[in-house]
Length: 130
Image (cartoon, rainbow, N blue to C red):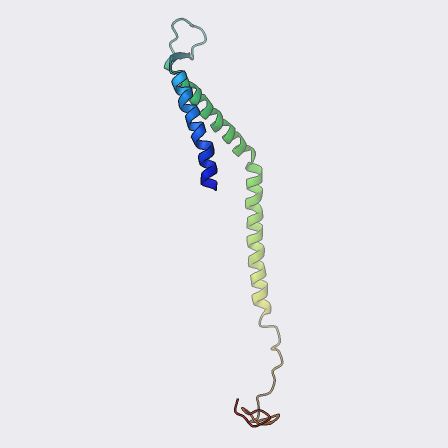
């Protein structure tokens, strides 16, 4: 089901991207020189669809890194809590190990003497062997 839904979304998006690239394949010049507009020294010429896809990719990367840096507090707290839990587990294991020998052995029943309630051990009331 997941593959079907992925294909249902990815195939139309891919078709839209191809149609967009074919419709916007004319070249544009992007200038990085704000002072000289007719002959810029820092400029690049590329297809419009490539420019828009690159700008969208840079936007996704910038947004992802902003979210990642914004969540650093929560990641730090999770690491700290995990370390606290690890030390608590180790302390609990040490306490259990130190208290294990101090427990008294449970009372045990005496060993059978060879005579059971109905006669010799290994036989029932009708003297059948068990």
